Image (cartoon, rainbow, N blue to C red; front, side, top):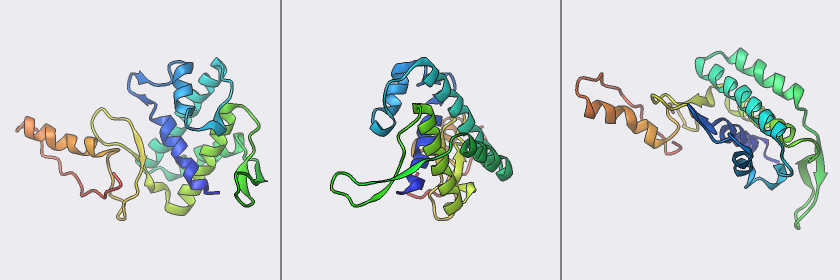
Length: 187
């Protein structure tokens, strides 16, 4: 089981809200988030939607603390999630695969999502460092990301956002010049 792969769940959830746009405004939005994750699906209710919004806020706070350089706060917040949403692994064999680890499928959708996300973030941070958690620096963008560059230089969630400062400078010659750091293809 690649625990770090579950960290992507955090990014997917946090990035469902950008300013006033909220992809989790209703149950259909939650279904859309879960559509490619059948192991996290099932019957959902409004309490699940509310719990997922709360989890999103908790996860965003981790990314914000990490981006601010407050590693202790970020880790404290993550440890709180780990305590409140413990993981229950089990050994499984299916689809012609050999024995391997899976997370237990018991619990509500938000609890299963939170447990997997917290474990994924914990594994990613322990393996690669907390400074890999990023908050896009483009004006008006609030998306989060993992910095996968070799030199830890990623500052934007996407190439589109990375190009925004130079577009602004070109359109407004009096605007201060912004140097966009060299990007790895991981952006």
